[in-house]
Image 1: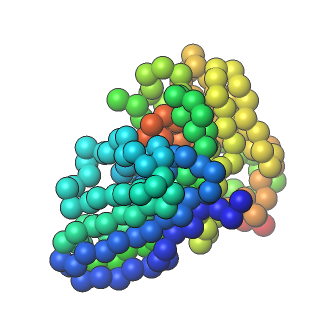
Image 2: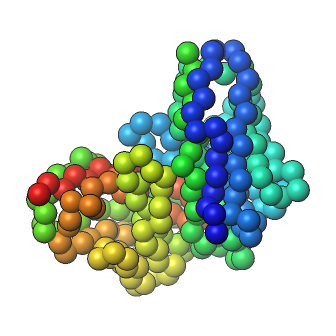
Length: 117
Length: 109
């Protein structure tokens, strides 16, 4: 168990540029989640995958955001035409989901900190 | 909709003091409840969990009991240490895992 890995750790970009983050979950975990966290707040749900299928997406998520999980392994989160309000910590988490009630705890990576200037 | 309301901080305690961080929830059905901890410069780590009413989760001296009648999951520790200084998040399980806003705890020697 090498843990959830996220790259890069930090990303500084100019407004209007596109950015892509990568998440490598714990290898046997079938569920993968993306969250966003701003200073002084808890993680805010963005989207989640079960294997390669994206099953849920936050209604608050702008269409500039897209996530993929090809082959049900690693995932990427892309933000197009970044805005200053996108500056945040982007967290990835995975779990071994075996039940429909989602009782399995999430295992988080250390996050990617995005700064949009 | 589902949500979690968590006691606001920051909280500052002396070493060996008793800790309570309040957490209440609103949920349809009976989801699992979790406490996560985030130490300075690190990612969120699972501290403890409870999957059904009256379950008590415990770890590292911390405890929390799933109270359906009061829709609460308060975190307690009898004697805090300096190393417990961190931000604590209450979370509601489900498709989305709803998190509270976090409570910052500082323990002073």
